[in-house]
Structures are given as C-alpha cells and as structure tokens.
Image (cartoon, rainbow, N blue to C red; front, side, top):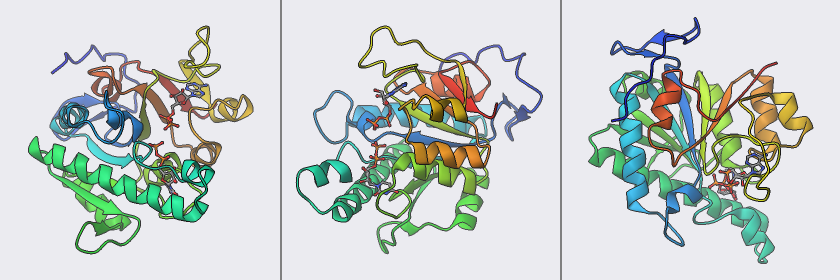
Length: 258
Ligand SMILES: Nc1ncnc2c1ncn2[C@@H]1O[C@H](COP(=O)(O)OP(=O)(O)O)[C@@H](O)[C@H]1O
Ligand SMILES: O=c1ccn([C@@H]2O[C@H](COP(=O)(O)OP(=O)(O)O)[C@@H](O)[C@H]2O)c(=O)[nH]1
C-alpha cells in the first residue's frame, strides 16, 4: 500500500471518514474507461488490470470512503464505431451499454475476490443478472460501505459513460467525479497527438467548453457545470494516484467552478 502523503494542507471542507483517516472526499463517483481495462491485451478485459484496480479501490474502502463506479464499454463495443461500420446507431449503442454490464460484472468479481463487498446495478432491467438501478437503494448500499457499480450507462442511446458518471455522481450526491483515464490530466491539446501539449492543474467548466478540450464529452461537462459537481481527471496507470487524490494530494487536473 503506498504511503499516505502529508495532507496537512487539505482545505477546510476535508472530512474525517468513518474509520478515522482524514480524507478530502467521503463519497466519490469513479469513472473507469472500458479501454483501460484491456491493459496490454488487444481486446477485452485483462484480469491483471482488474486486480490492480480492485486493490486501489479496496484502499479507499479501507479508510471509509464510499465508492460508486461507472464503467465504460469501449474495450468491447462503441455505438458510434459500430454505426460507422454500417449498423443502426441505436442497436450499436444498446450493444455498447450491454458491454458496460459485462465489464461491471468482471469488476465486481475482482472486487469480491479481494473481499470488497460490491453490487452491480444496471440502468437497463436485467432480472436474474444484476439489480435494476434505484437511486435510494444505491445510496443505502454506499452508506453501508458496499462499492456500487453502475452499469448500462444512462440506459439511453446517444449518450456516453462519461455522461452517465456525471449523472450518477450528481444523483448520489458524490463529493467529486473522478475520471480515471490513460492520460494524467487535461492538456491544452490531445497529449497523444501533440508531444508539446501542456497540462492544466485546474480548469473551469467554461474553459473546458470554450477551448473544446476533448477529455470528456461536452454533454457531460455541461451537466457537471449546471450542478457545480467537481471533476478530477487522473492517470489510472499510476499506482497510488487514486488514494493520493482522495486524501487531498495533487493528482491530474481539477475541473470546477471559477
Ligand atoms: N485536451 C485533452 N487533454 C487530455 N486528453 C485529451 C485531450 N483531448 C483529447 N484527449 C484524449 O482523451 C482521452 C481520454 O478520454 P477517455 O474517455 O479515457 O478515452 P476514450 O474516449 O478513448 O474512451 C485520452 O486518451 C486523450 O487522448
Ligand atoms: O448512456 C450511455 C452510455 C453508453 N452508451 C454506449 O456504450 C458505449 C460504451 O461506452 P463509452 O464509449 O462511454 O465507454 P468508454 O469510452 O468509457 O470505455 C458507447 O460508445 C455507447 O455506444 C450509450 O449508448 N448510452
């Protein structure tokens, strides 16, 4: 387990978690991109990545942080890509949403193998496989210390799991939406395409929108802006980064109100 950094400078709204560790956030909504679950493989899910994520999530649960997770599906299917290949868009989006359920089941399996109690809820009813999403039940689970995996996105085509993460984050009254991705923050241009891109430590929603910074889709950014929900974008491949940011360390880029 990585050392917990000195967080004497955590701002006033820091909270003591139930288990006594000082954390900046008590309830978080973590967005895991589907593609990141592929790890070094070409397609699908790399169990090693799941196990590493389970370890990192377990560290948060261990210090009393409530964790809701929205998992993407881009490692399996994306509606827009299927549409480009000739499929009807809504069918493609349904396949994309079902892919997120598969990822959530795999993530739950990894969490439970690490003895972390977890639940999968789906925005699309799937009786016998996973529970149907219900906000009040989800909050009850979170309060009792269970990790809740929100799957099937928003349940509607033409949306993304980034929008689902922002929506669920607002609904469950999370302190922050944390987007775990392949880059270590938001840059002035796509860092994969431009080696001279420079990273922001902090941005306002309007700066992200005005500069069309492509790390999250604009629907998602408008939603968090309208509800003043802070978003932190960080590198999920950096061991210990998730714990560090939850206890108040500087990781990635914070997007918030100006
Ligand atoms: N201004 C930017 N700052 C950071 N990343 C950006 C920016 N513009 C585009 N990106 C891209 O956004 C991706 C992160 O979004 P993510 O949702 O994890 O990926 P995907 O959309 O492929 O599922 C990064 O891989 C990066 O290439
Ligand atoms: O509310 C939603 C969320 C997701 N999707 C579909 O599910 C796919 C997988 O989600 P996403 O691309 O957001 O996954 P990620 O990029 O995070 O892996 C998307 O491409 C969409 O086709 C959808 O239709 N509605």
